Length: 142
Image 1 (cartoon, rainbow, N blue to C red):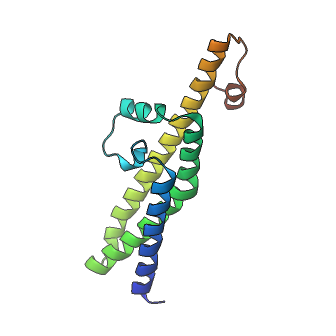
Image 2 (image 1 turned 90 degrees about the vertical axis):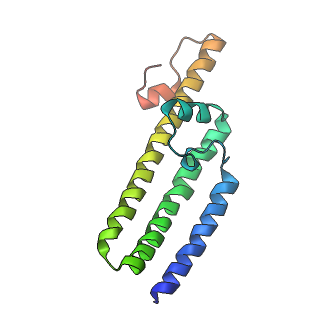
Image 3 (image 1 turned 135 degrees about the vertical axis):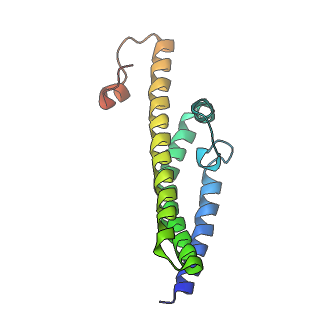
């Protein structure tokens, strides 16, 4: 298949995933759209989300952002290769994709920690003394 056709298909997919991500996730609270945020800012942004929004965020990271990384990685690799005609530039794209992937893993971890804290806080408010199911399943001590 023609390489320009591949790049055109990847561009269309990139635009589609951009639309899906922006319609599913709240742009002002999504960490992927922020640049150079601190740990405190990450917790604050996620802390503003209710439980349902956090679950949607988690789904968006796995179902939409993971394929999005692959699509933009392939697209930008193809474009950089077309421009510079050397495979060395592909390392740059791979590095960006890997950093985005690890960022997603960290956000997923924060979402899980926030979920445990949410459950624990609700138990304290209700006066329950037993450990929550989430803590028992994840071996986290509340």
